[in-house]
Image (cartoon, rainbow, N blue to C red):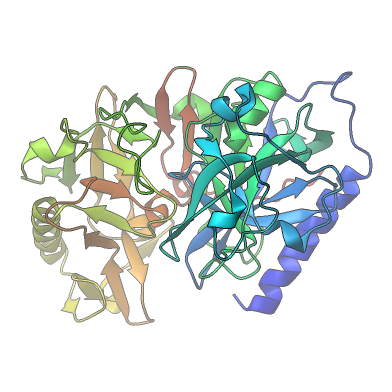
Length: 437
């Protein structure tokens, strides 16, 4: 999509947010049953981003989403923040928000925006620029939109201010993005704050779009229902669920910027291709005492990464299944690519070998169809959208954003479970929905 079209979409949603925000509901008199935020995909960087309205209803801040990051940060100098307030160190709030020290701005070169001496010091990162920064934590009002699972409703002002930090470290972020929003399970995360402040169940769900040409995907906070017309039933009733796995290492003691904090790890038991098990060393699927192994989700990783021995077995099995389907191999930018003319199409994308992932405790496997396993690199070439993550990665399986597109994935932090829908394409719908009032 051209940058001008993308910019027009951003302006359109901002205008809708401003229109709703001009009549902000009184949160003391009414109570939202759920909250909703747009998700768009930048087709150049393959990043997913949302918008938050901070301090004023018309302050629409575009932020790249990161499931594995802790704090929200953005370039505060680009916005008028009339109710902005710094959080002091040595306070209970600072401790609760994982501030680690008192900020000394004189130690930083260059000094980040709105750095406050004796503020609550936190560390945050731009992983795309491979840089980490310290700055003081601040807070301000957030204006959010409610939903009944079908449409966008009233706009509410958060009962309490929302915590974030300021940085101009925006290199390599999607065009128009002013920072990043961390979605791990910590007290500063958007879902934790909004669930607590509006007395909603601590659940959030992502429905990542495969395109941003028309309507956005969405993030929901507070639980379902989740309705995606023309499919009229609640997707929340049909999720494949598995327990979240606790990370076995105390990251407070071994802190580095690449620590997993409270990332969302799950236990997978098997990978099958066309109902045939892929043979590999299953020990890589468990997290060992040093924190290596296991499976997690990532919106920062565009395509799924597999530890080398798993990957080798995986592409071998896929290649064999593809040969049975008479798919013709060609050279391409991935290890396994095919001539697109040798592959037929269906409502779930290219008709290729099915990939089934078995979750611990789940009754059914999670199936990936061609729309999520194959990426089109040209009109003539389709490639298997997985890559080799190395022999000794920290995490053996990182399920990337492309594999999650047009699936609803719910993180239930009350029951400590993850639920994933079947592909919305099988129900003749997608994550990209108009949810007009």
